[in-house]
Image (cartoon, rainbow, N blue to C red; front, side, top):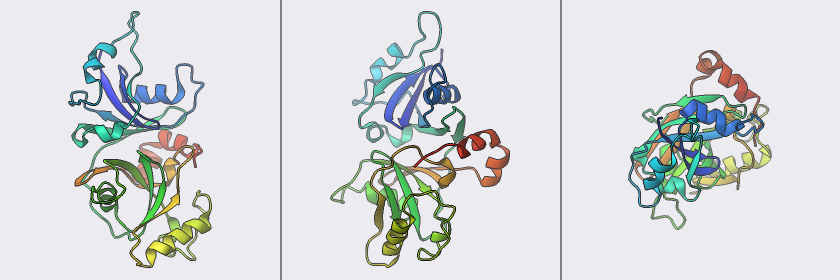
Length: 257
């Protein structure tokens, strides 16, 4: 039976499984009896990567079918500092699973900066603040993982969120369709970084509580460590409405923070 390795971001964990990604996502989100309803965000990881931090020698031993032949659905190999210790080269595709167990696969793509000047980021691991920034995603990842910073992270996983009318006009832009709490505070944060006072980033929410609203993701998801960077673009709205309609309909009914 085939063996898979996954890096979950919610919670941060390294998990071995005999289930392929879509089946694993459904199991991870809803459980054996479909009584659990938890969103899942996870990467498939190359199971052959080498590590002195993780018990990889146990992977083949533990990730085997049960005595009755049924697949081993999940074996936790680590739940601490996982993202930090998985090399960028080991990351494969990213999967987004809704609370009712429907999974969307995102593939890597080359990152090309666009003309946007203001950004809203939701960090997913190792910490989970929401941050307004004037740095594009690659610059943001590079800055937060720079060893020259007093406070830095070895690696970061995050996504960018839509700002709607606030992107062009933080003071008076239309925010009626933005599902974020405390819009006046968000406006204040964007205004502060827009003043060119030397502050590149401003924390909007110290810690995200609850699930990520997939419908708020703008360009996609990112993993960065210094000069190493991976970009997973979200499908266009047209693709979501057509090719991925079932997943998208489920995502639109998911409640988050």
